[in-house]
Length: 607
Image (cartoon, rainbow, N blue to C red; front, top):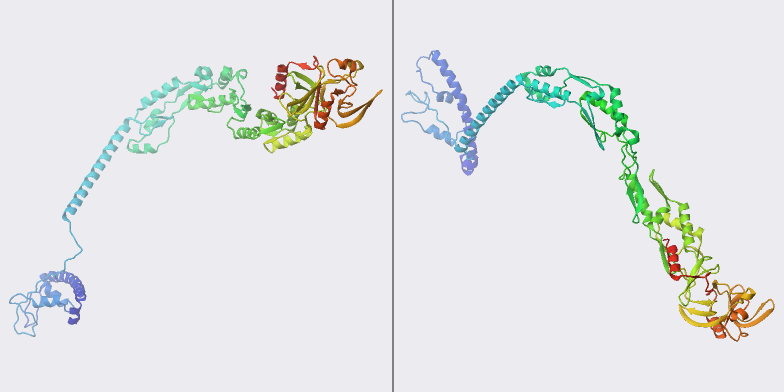
C-alpha cells in the first residue's frame, strides 16, 4: 500500500486531508468529553485497585483512550515517533517501570488554503461604511422625530396640510384667515356671463340673492387631531355650509330682459355653402350667428349659485345654437369633392376650325346640389337646357349669318340650304352620359346638318364657292380661298318679279347640254348648275353683253347668266354641294363689318 501511495502522491495527499478532517472532529468531541470528566473528578474522589497508582489524565489521554484505531498516515506515524526527552510510550504490561506519561495536545498541521486571501484594508473600509450608515440612519430618525414634533405643534394653531374648504386650499392658515376670506367672498359675490359680443354681470340685488355663512370653519379645525396631522394627506375636500336663497323668477326676468337674449337681436346660424370661384368649387363658411338657448342659460346660472361659482362662458357651455354642419364637416367636404370631380372634366367641342370648351361654371350649372343635405347629382333636365342654349348659339342652318364679300364688306344673309345644326336629342343623351361617367372628351357635337367650315364670323360655306354680287352684277369663283376667275353676269329681271334672291345656297346637280323650259320659253344651254330650285348658273348664248344695268331690261327669269368661259370653268370644277352666295348691297343685307363681327363673336362665345 505504501508503494501505491508513493506511485500516486495526489491520492496520498487526499487521504491525508480526509484523515485530518476526521481527526479534528474527533479532537473537538474528546475535548468536550475531557472537560466534563475533569469537572466530575474535582468533586469526586476516585478509588484505585491495590497495586495501581493514580495517573493524571490529560485531554490527550482521554482522546487516546476513546479514539478508534485509524489507518496510520505518515503524519500520525511522525507524531507517534516524536516525544519529549525522557518520555517513553508503551503499556504497563510491556515495561515494569512506571513513569508519568504526559501527553500534550498537538494541533495537527494544516496545509495552507491556497484559495483564501485576507485583505485587511478592505475589511477596515467596510467597517467605516457600516459605521457611517448607522450614523446616517440615526440622523434620519432624529430628523423625522423633529419634523413630526414641529408638524404636531403647528397643527394646534393652523389647519393641517391638504385642508381644502369649498375649493380653496387653507393649509397652514388659521381659521380666522379662512373665515375672513369666505366672508369677503360672500360680500362681493356676483355672477359674470361671458358672451360672444361682450359680458354681463348679475349682482345679488338683481335676483334677490342672500348668502350667509354657517360659521363652521372652527369646527373643521377642531376635528383635526394634531398628533395625526399626517392623515391630512389622505383627506378629501371639506365644505363650509352656506345659507343661500334667491328669487328664480327675478333671475329669469333679468336674463330675458338683456339685449343679447332678446329674439329680435339674435341671428340664426346657417350651414356653409359651396360656390364656384375661378373654376373650382369652394366651401363658404356659414354664419355663426348669436342665437342663445336662454332656458339653458337660466338653468346653468341657477346651478351656479348654490356652488358660489362666479363665471360662466355661455359659448363654451354650449348655449349658442349651432348650424347642423360646419365648413370642415366631412359631409360638406365630400360634396365639394364630388362637385370638383365633375367641374374638373375637360369637355371640348370641335366644330370646323373652332374648339369650344364647356366651362367649369357651365358644368356646375348642370348639377343638382342640395346644400341642405349636401347631395350632388347630374341633372338631365339641366343638361338639356345647356344643349338647347348651345344649339341656339352655334347652329347656322336656317339662321341669319355673316359673309365677307370680295371687297371686304360684310353682308347678313339667311338660308335653310346650308349650315350646321345640332341633333339636340342625340347630343343630350351623349353629353349626359359623358358627365355622369366623368368622361372628358374632345369631339364634335352630334349634328343633324353639316356645313363646310365654322369660324367666329359664322362663315360655314367653306373655302371653295361662287360669290354673286347682284347689285354690281358680278360673279367670283374662289377655290381654297383664292380667286380663280370673275365675270359680269345678268340676273333676274325685277320688273317681272323675277329678281334673283340673296342667300346661302349649294349646287344641287351639274348638267350639260340641256334645254331650260318655262312659261313661254325654252332656252338650250351647254352648262346647267341649279342651286335654288329652278334657279341656277348657266351660260347664255342669246346674251351679247353682260353686267351693268342690263338685268333691268334683259334680265332672266331668276337664273344667273354667265359668260361662256366662266360657265365652262365652273362646270369643269364644280361639285354637288358646293356653296353659292348671292347678295344685294342694300340696307337689308349690308351691315357695319366691325359691329357685325363684334356682335357675332359675343354671341358665339356666349359673352
